[in-house]
Image (cartoon, rainbow, N blue to C red; front, side, top):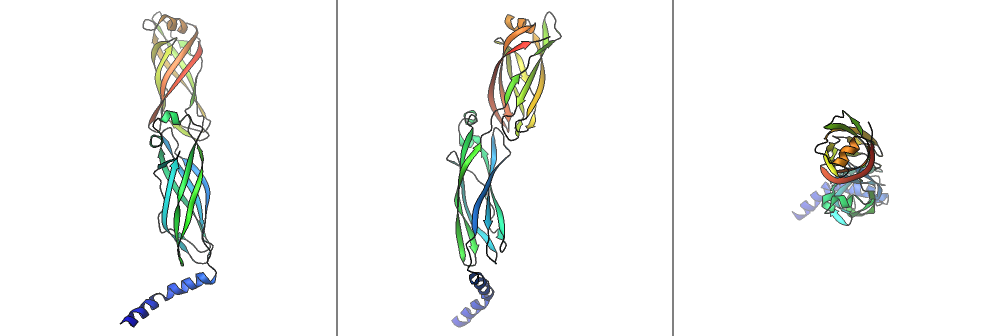
Length: 275
């Protein structure tokens, strides 16, 4: 009975033995694994997707497959949740495959205060781990080791133009506030809106809101003009006088909405009210 079992096993393994002999006959070489690049996607002031891209090469005349993945991604030395390719990926004989390790990063998971993180020019990332590649002579482990920097998204630059005063009466006027919003990043950034209280010469006179500015191109600008009705009776004397014509300090305490994150911003600027 024992001999029968062994014979059956050998017969079942004949095709596999032939496969292994073919691999060994060509002095089977170890698969190659190298870093290609890092790509940022879906960037906002709330977070981003960081995808590390790798090349897995098979220099042998028989196919190999991905058996296991051990992958960890660190941002500013803090481990974040990372995606990974599925096990079982097949790499054809004398072929190669591109592997992606995408990670969705929320800045609140990396730092306690998002606005502090956004003041950085760059942040560090580090990938660690190993791939297990199944070959006819067993599983070969290939190390994952790479680190680098990525550009941290910046708050947009917001600049007031000279407000235009219209519809002046004894009791008030309409002031149109022109704003230029500039994306300081090299990549696209969604701005759902900039809104907040505006003051003239220290006197709060109302609220300005740009509305949804959409996805702003890298280094792109948007110009909006926001009308605001001002009541001279409720505005302080300096503000009322400025609106009637002249210079005054305009302060805009606002928040920038991007990716579901509200980040405070303050603009303090001397402007000339024109009629």
